[in-house]
Amino acid sequence: MVVVAAVFGSLIGSFLNVVVYRVPAGLSIMRPASACPSCRSAIRPYDNIPVLSWLLLRGRCRDCRVRIPVRYPLVELGTALLFAVVAFAFLGPLRVPGRPLAATILELLAYLWLAAVSVALAIIDVETHRLPDRIVFPTAIAVVVLLAAAAVVDGDGMRLVQAVIGGVALFAFYLILALVRPGGMGFGDVKLAAVLGFALGWAGWAQLVVGAFAAFVLGGIFSIALLAANRVKRTGGIPFGPWMLAGAWVGILFGAAVVAAYFAMIGV
Image (cartoon, rainbow, N blue to C red; front, side, top):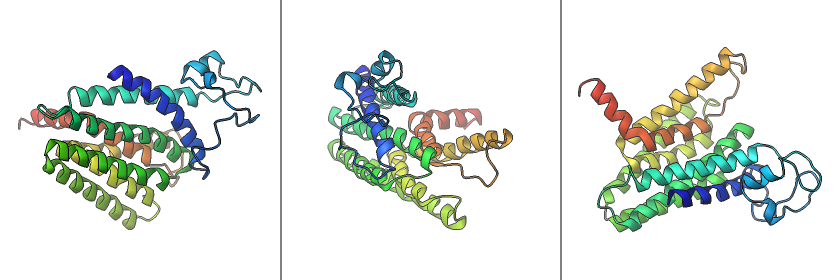
């Protein structure tokens, strides 16, 4: 299943390259078919194999020989690895003992969806300082529906309540930050916070706390490093969406272990 998830992730990664390019431009992600941005030649099916095609073409368009950015295979490979990690986690260490397989699959699908969207949103936010509603809103619907269905199959309504509380809490927290310091936190971040809070709350209270806190730790470290290297001004806009997403995945995958280690360290 992990191998299948990785292969599927690479295919999704290829589609995410289209999403990253077209959504910020307001273009359809379905039509027209993929083509070279330089010569407009249609991409042949055998030139659209994730990672492998880029390597065989030596990173250049078959027709005009213009260089294909290395970001394309990196997105495909990164999505494949993230899908493999998520599948391994939710089918192994994070699987709730005794949970029906159908509920586990629904849960896994929700987090795989979130994983794919995390890749796309992180890149778009870095490049455009935007978190498009065209991606965030469908993600919210998909994650809520899939996890709600998992709760129904599993008969575990408390996890759904937990998820709702997590979504509301993180949304309210980011909304307060956005209102207190206009311009410091965008409303795209606020809307994304609701989705991440829901996913973190479903995973558990420890995951919610660690995921929320990790975003600021990771973002802070990165910002300090940029300031120290004079790569950005103190008032320069540093997109926070990627760190929200990274922090959420730290919480989802390692939150319980982090909290357990902390309590063990303080002797509780």
